[in-house]
Length: 166
Image (cartoon, rainbow, N blue to C red):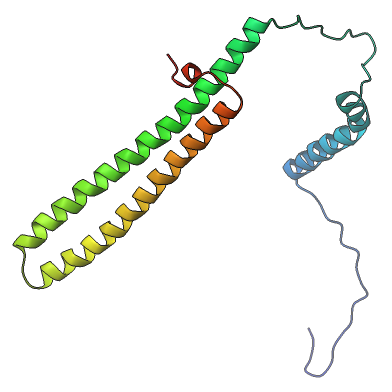
């Protein structure tokens, strides 16, 4: 018990920290994973990026691709690429149509309303018109993307039939 005005100082005591068993296992696993990464890294980096082949392995020899296979791969590539852009255009057209329907419904209901409801509907109409303008912009950009892809295909002498995915 200490009295007012008197303090007793204790010498610093070394506190032994005890790690719970679960925490010790987690730390052990973490350290072993980190250690194994550092130990295996040099071998991995040698074989992954160089022409060196690990011992007791033979390189995989691929059969040369014929002109027809290569042509089919290129045709498939252009078909998938154009199909992707057409799908995006379809999605943008769907959004434009949906927003146009909402806008026409709002205009119909605004013509029937009066007072505060009409003001509310007019603000909603303005917001929908902005959204519709944005949707038209997106549609225009996506059509330009498709046009750019078609121009690129034409410059590379790709047959137009490849772009139709038949």
